[in-house]
Amino acid sequence: MFITEAFAQTAAPGGGGADILMSILPFLLIFVEMYFLIIRPQRAQMKRREELLKNIRRGDQVVTGGGIVGKVTKVVDDTELEVEIAEGIKVRVVRSGVSEVRVKGEPVKE
Image (cartoon, rainbow, N blue to C red):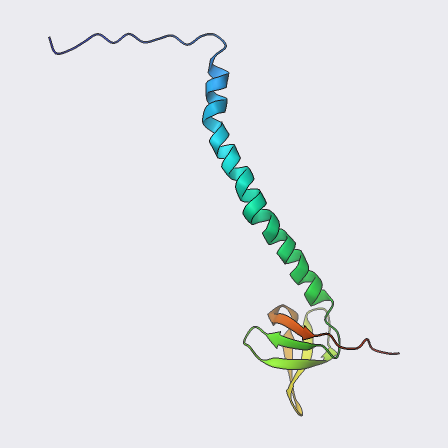
């Protein structure tokens, strides 16, 4: 009396593929949107930062991650710089610890 019969509809032989595509389509669109809005600009920013860190040379004024402003007196190797933070006070800074290059120095004349 309270139970009604439910009749299942059978799917058409070729109609299942379109249903799957329509259910996956929103996820694909969200992924494409995230790629263009988040992932791609982040990669470009990482490339600019790597180029900035790679091109640090003697005479550049830099700001470290801790907020210390100093002048590069020597490029020790690929990973370290010697930075003068006050007159006569030099510290070694890891190149990746530099957050900003404020003033580009003159190229070294040899």
